[in-house]
Image (cartoon, rainbow, N blue to C red; front, side, top):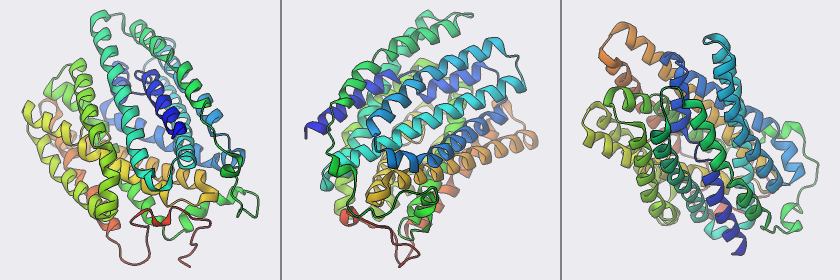
Length: 434
């Protein structure tokens, strides 16, 4: 129990330190300031996440052998806090056009790589210190608590930004806010180092052979884990397509001010943390499949709200879905998907299993971003409209496809993932369905 308390303390301080550096609202604002073509807007973010998740998977077998999750998390987030400064420098020293676009792609890829590597190590650490019967609940609270702290300090940062920013002060204000938030990285690291993990928990007794690079393919061969990889792909395809154009749509078409968006983000995060632990309870009581079916149907019908320019419709959509990770429904999908990936992972190769899920997530995110960019550009050229409203709505309508994919995979018959916590203690994967 003491370890969980230190873990939650780390998440609070770490969320504060990343309030500006890792908040997607601030990233979108930077990309808009760079005057990057909106038709490439989603592709850059999607390709960056794919490259980052691929790199994270390729080093996962080394991290599995190293078994030093705390040190990896601290080092990774230290680098993550420094990378946004490179993004600002590139705006000044590189001409606009292809050079700036490629540098932005490279830096954002590094951001995703370090972040995903840290998050994968966090999941492995949580599995080691959390009681088996409360893993889903602890994971839900962990994700929501981190998001709440990030959102709260993002509001403070956005208000300071609105107060200080002038026409020529964007970069200086952004760097100042980065430095102020980065100060919380020290208490986050101290809290993390206080977590004690017993040696015998780190090394499973049934590991009979050393880790090999080819082990990164093990999760794909595991017939009971493969459906979860499909759900991870489709979930992030939805999130990728939505996140690529939701905030530009709200800022440019609905014309809501940036600092109001961040305040929305905080209010929604407060509501999410109330439901965070309940998703694990719902999962245990009704089964993962039934809960996922209800959530995904809710996400699909919520898209209708984006076809209205009414502030009330946008507010209701924000409460239910928001950017795809912080709404009441979308956060439930993310919590259940990640919890199931952790629970159904092989105990001797947890890092590889989680990194594999991250790669499928990154691939789905890239697919959603690229598809959204193609749809946006096509509708924009065929049906030009004021503020590109038809192009935005075309993107939002296409998000029904990943929702249908999740429903199809989630309701597969035959041998598939465990619908409860019964498979938490897994020594070796059921390869080839055997």
